[in-house]
Amino acid sequence: MGLFDIFGRSRPPAPNTIANLKTMALQSPDGPVTAIVMGLNIPDLPGADAFIQEVAEKFKVQRMCSSPDTSVMLITIVGELPASHFVQRWRQLAADDKVLGHFMSQMRKSDVLRGTVAGQTLETVSLLS
Image (tube, rainbow, N blue to C red; front, top):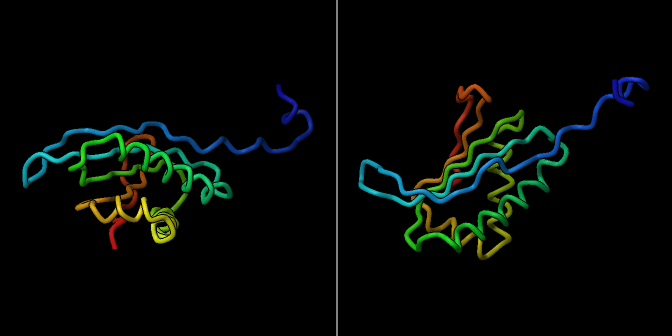
């Protein structure tokens, strides 16, 4: 029994985390593509906007280390944050950040998928305008 149980207060939310971030060679109907794949856990909704900014910074570093022909990105979210909220915040950041905006302009496909731990897809939204 912890202090939170003794005093009857709710536990603090688990922190938002990047579960994985990698660059991969994938096959598409048009041939091979280079993709950045990110898995995010977002249980702390009040901290989501600040976390999305951290994710954008990590993406920029990953993109700089990736092949110049990287043109696909897939972000998977586990948590209650709607994919549309993530997309809205990301687009706002890309509009204000020239580097992020440039990298996004090079993407041919860029999706945010929200799902469950069991692998069920709940929604998919494109990051591209």
